[in-house]
Image (cartoon, rainbow, N blue to C red; front, side, top):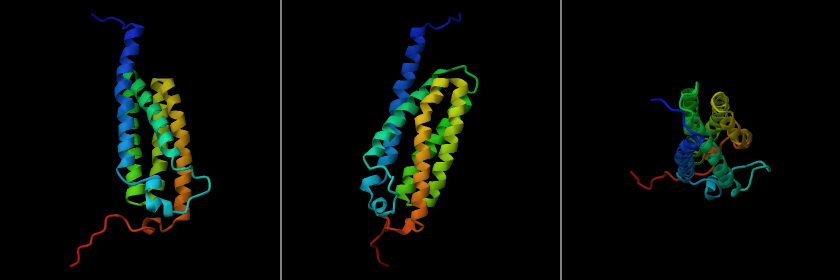
Length: 184
């Protein structure tokens, strides 16, 4: 027997998804950030030439926490739309862009690959835009929750480009921590 779910059941179903996705996205984001010294904790980053409009170090964890909460809610809305057309494509796009997003910090701060990270963040932005349009086909509110993320990625793309432009040898600015003291 097929019954239509009540509004309360639908809200509770969404809440269950959100109770999983928001902490998961936050945890993954924090794990990525903590995987390598980043921001003010990175001597390499401190040594880079940065534009005057670079936000202070304390702003990044605040901004990313808010953004991760918003995109965690957005993906919960999409996951909750069980029979919606385009849902699977929207989920796949979200996963790919999030995986690239989580890899960005180790690429930039860990490997010091400034140029690759500058290209990578533009790819993340393009995938996040595609994800937002895919979300809009499933749940318009989920797409609107992605807009601050798109704005921040746009800003971060400009910042990464300018840092890359100012530091053509940024990869070698400070010796990486992966050195050995073994002599042959």
